[in-house]
Length: 320
Length: 320
Image (cartoon, rainbow over all chains, first blue to last red; front, side, top):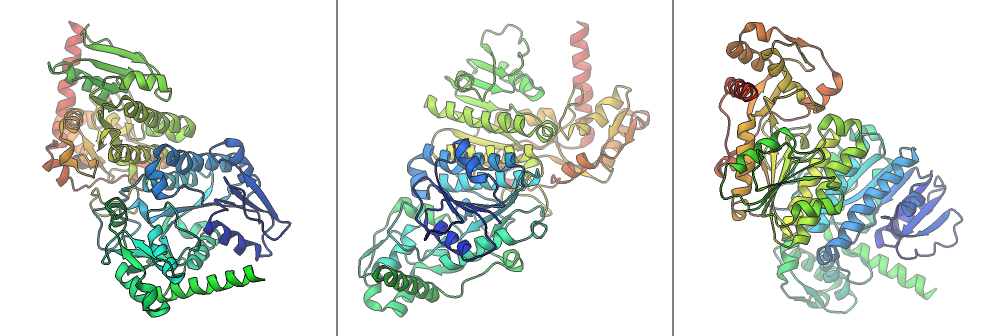
């Protein structure tokens, strides 16, 4: 089984690559990104590709011979909002170009497209389902919603075997803050745990729909493994998450990492970020995804514990 | 007020142009199409443009100085299904190119995008609203749904003042059958009235969501006139129609044009056409459109009478 991952230099891309390298059934693993990918311990199955996927030759190199393509590459919400044209190029043109390359290859590869809850916007029902209309309130969300339609139609036409998964906000991300509007959701846990202050741009009552990195990666893998027949004509799935308010996140931080950590969060309202984040739904009916074998996290306390364990493991690797 | 109409050579485009020429408030009227536009009685306000809107210079010529752009140009459903690449170019690339031209003009023109009920597909609720998720089962529907998202995001960003209207199947169209999958809906009335046979590819129990040409044109005009504030952040509207089964259409034909006309319809099942047409909803809640001043037809009998009156008027013009 030959796998290709775009956005492989990103956090989820790296985790997804590691998950595949531990699978002996994986043959070639193409890791593509605009930035040079991380070294992968010299595994002979890995092929690193550096390039812009809106260039047809770069897209063709990714798709060539692939049985499964994970398309994670994207510019994040804050950047797509600040630079509309870059967002259109990376989030729309590159997706289309990659679909065309997959179509031209003629192998009907499984095409897993990482979409987002950012496709939704108000007015929202109490519980979002796959029957809920998208109404993106950010260019990132609009570009993801367009990508969803492209993957679904390319699948209907028999050009690719597409699987669109709408990821919850992934939390807790390691590393540093990024330009994603949702970046604060990880910052308010990660920075305080490290003894640093963190700004929270939204109110404590705001609810978020979250997934741990581990569950997000497991669900991307599940999306690729699932038989196409299970999806039928509905290629788009809302992935499971947990509903947590910012206030509950802070309470969990206090329980798991202590009140001193929680006291490092400083509320600093940001109207632009608040408007975008508030437009995202926090409550979904994910019965369809669960019945298709996708995973769900338990509590936000466990998401913090997962992060602490990952940080400790990473520190050990650095010391070794 | 300067108006531009794309797809101006088409049936609705010609009617829309005529409606604007009867309005003294209209200054320049740009009529654009890939085929040479109809002469318009030498009205000095008319400027004919022939060109492919996926060419930026053609798109710029349409958008230049326009206060209102009606974007009707499209390849129809049957053609977009048969030739995927042509559909993507005309229905997606040209729409995006025209939006870019409108953005570059910097005048924030009103941008009326003619979308279609073909964006919807099963599973459908008993009654479709603007909160119902799109699920196109044709490339035409997918391309229209993508155009909707583009117009909405260009509007949110303040590049255009967009208004997306999802047209019902327009019936009765004059002229000859075309490559639209819905073409039969007009054929089964138009041909029998002219003494010709007509094939019906779907069963008599199938329900359609129909609008007369007159109402469709009135509602396109309304979409342009409506203040942006009335739409708010929801730029997409399902236009009013009437729900009629094929059997009811034939009964109405018998009432209005006589049983001999109705007897000229021959059922000739077409699985491909049936699958696409059956995926379209026939029942909508259009309360929002009605409250915004859009028009609704009364009965299908009246749609046939409108067609007969239009045919009689056209015959008179030809004789004169």
